[in-house]
Amino acid sequence: MYHRKLLLVVLSAITALLITISVIYAANNNVEHHDEVNIQSIAPITSTLSSNRYTQMDDLTPVAENPFVKLDGHELLGVEPSSGLRLYVNKTYLSIRIYDNQGNYIWGSTPNYDYLHPDHELYDPTDIGLNTPEAVSAVETIQSWFDEGLMPPGTDLEVADSLFMDGKVGMVVNGPWAIPNYRDAIGAENLEIVELPTQNGENLNSFSGNKGWLVNYYTENQYWATELALFLTNEESSTTYFEMAGELPAHTAVEIDDEFMEPIFAQTQHAHPMPNIPEMSQVWEPMTDALQFIQQGDNVQEVLDEAVANIESNISMMGQ
Image 1 (spheres, helix red, strand yellow):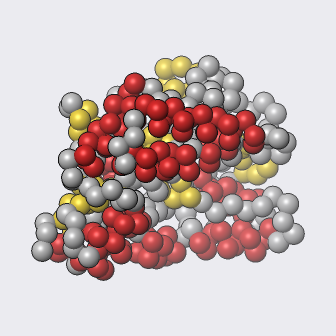
Image 2: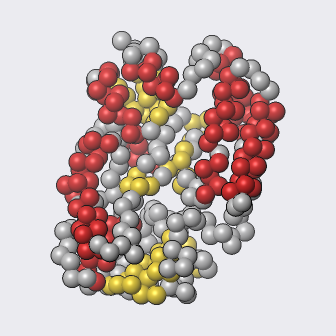
């Protein structure tokens, strides 16, 4: 039996944001709370929301204002009475603001641009960046694995998954959701999880993503929709979801004593948020095709140039 090391790309953590939204709405409508919400008046170390202040990591003191997170244009929707947290919404742009009355922090989010405001100087969805010299070098490294016979041509995640669970390959790169299937197939005693390796002394990055439950503001069944959201995100349900799906829950009361999850937590320190813009949906298919072509020995620069051209073409047609 091979000694299997599974390198896991962290792509999933359920966001706590929607728990807070549901609790605030429930409080505003006299709905009994099912879970307590822990409130701190200092900035969190990490957050899926953008704060109105940039905060330095060493002592958590604010060092600069974030001009893109303000209450302007947002109306008060409700107040969570025990903590004083206020929820503001902008119905036109479907954006929210959560205001901490004690610490004067504001956290803001919009569905399309959670991680970078569209007016920011760095925001440019037309800057694909997948055929740069750095990208070409990285894909040439992947191509070398096929040239050297380390991976057979035609390998994709489905093939790799099958071979790994059949005990025919020693490692695979996948996400934490794959752990339950791997554990059942080869046994927990034969499975090991590690962070992505370093290259030239630097940690390799991965994407991170979020999942959450959203109560539709316009639903005719707000009470029951909120009750369902509260039930699905309470401690017991979050624990069950983690056990069944293998995805990290956001509920702070859920204790995770799992050796396989420690490397997942570690990898999140080197993860970048998945770009939460519509244009991202146009990336996957052209890049999947590109990786198939490079397995066949095609010129990497030419393949990536064509992939980027296809992505740009697809993006340009989105608004038509």
